[in-house]
Length: 94
Image (cartoon, rainbow, N blue to C red; front, side, top):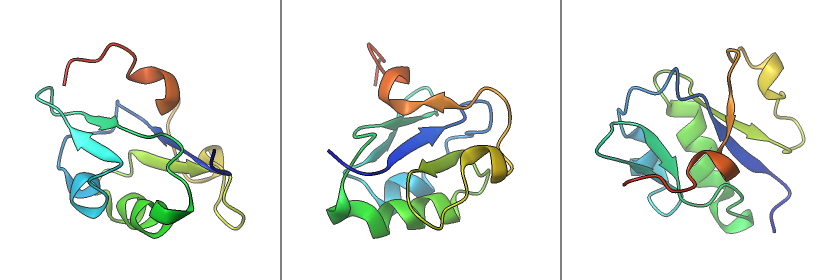
């Protein structure tokens, strides 16, 4: 289990796929043109790729919670309705 988790604001996601290109083992853009987080707590081996995906997301739909030095989602300019990815994809059609 990781010491951080990824969250997505589906209200902001436009399906550009930058996250998937940065970390394809963690993110997937589905037919619905929304990001699906394949592993909401991907661990240290994917930390740099996840940080790049969050940094380069053109709509700022992704957040990282639990990394020291990273601002919490509420401070990072996120909007209300941020979804915890560990539950948002249960039963999602990809």
